[in-house]
Amino acid sequence: NKPTLRQAISTDTDALVATNATETPQVRAAIVALVRNSDLFGLRLALRQIEDRFNHKHNYPYVFVNDVPFTDEFMQGVRDLTHAHVEFGLLDEHSWGIPQWIDQERYAETKRTARYPHAEKDSYRKMCRFQSGFLHHHPLLRDYDYYWRIEPDVEYYCDIDYDPFVFMKENGIKYGWNIAMTEFMSTVETLWNTTEQFLAARPDVVSKRNLRRWLLDDNGGYSGCHFWSNFEIVDLSFYRSEAYQAYFDHLDRAGGFFYERWGDAPVHSIAAAMLLDPSEIHYFDDIGYFHPSVLTCPKDAKTRGSCVCDSERSFVQNGYCTVRYKQVRHHELHPGESLDTV
Ligand code: GDP
Ligand code: MN
Image 1 (cartoon, rainbow, N blue to C red):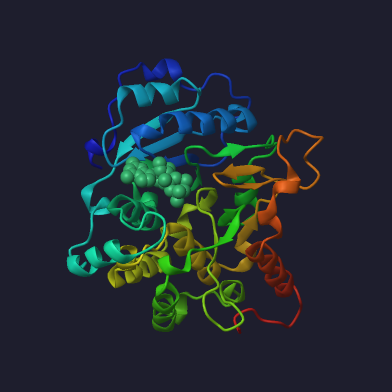
Image 2: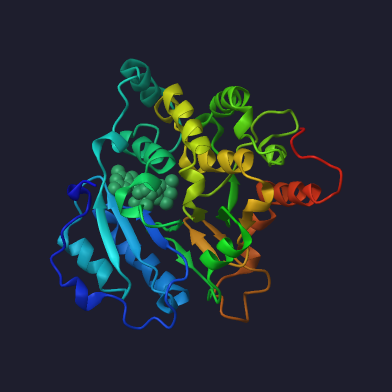
């Protein structure tokens, strides 16, 4: 337990600890983000909404982590918006670096020639690798069984009148999502092949019923479908399992976080699809949500109810990956049929 991973704060924390919660948290859970100091305004925007729409009733703690120390301005700016307990942490180099087995020349060549968003950035790749393999192991998350990921500039459009953490716990849900999309395929060219090597080597960890059919297109290649991980509510025992760790280690060794630009979203999604039973995955389609530049909004919410979003602009709910997911999940319900055959 490295003390350097928990940042000292200059304000009197006792005075700021929960005072107005009507319920005490029923689940050991936290709302979590990796963020930069420069994200303060965007994070405040997100925090204000998640407090107003959900957390003022629950006071789930927040955990924010960063690869450089948070400024006093950042920490105060966050604390000003919540009564909940807030912790700020640093990452260790091991979880943020470029592993020594990465061929620097090959990596440099990728950065020079690749044509996708953030192609030239070390930091974006380190961020994706960190969120894939290390966030759930951070010492500040040790006491939590679930996390809800947020990001700067996300918006929550609707009152959340129940506790998603309790819902997940009571129903044995391990992975909750609310936006599904296709990936820039050039960022994940070898991700599925590398995954298949792992699945072949470790058939013992593959869920008998799984969402392989959602991951694959009609030609048997990766469709690029993934859950957007900027919103995800997760039972951390999943990411901390030997199976997930072995999968991450296999991917990390293959180097695709750097030679390509594998995102934590497809990595988490493929793991959820292949290692979990479909019944352990939940689509939170009632949580109205926006991450630039995509929104998801409950049906008919435009002019009534607590949501403030235009369901007619919620294109992603009719998109390929969402519809395909529903088809595969529906298919799963037919007696005598199995999902583990393509
Ligand atoms: P996008 O959603 O894929 O466009 O990526 P973002 O720029 O939103 O980054 C995803 C999350 O990682 C956000 O919460 C960012 O604040 C955070 N993030 C990205 N790069 C860095 C970085 O270099 N350092 C830190 N501390 N956080 C980062
Ligand atoms: Mn983002």
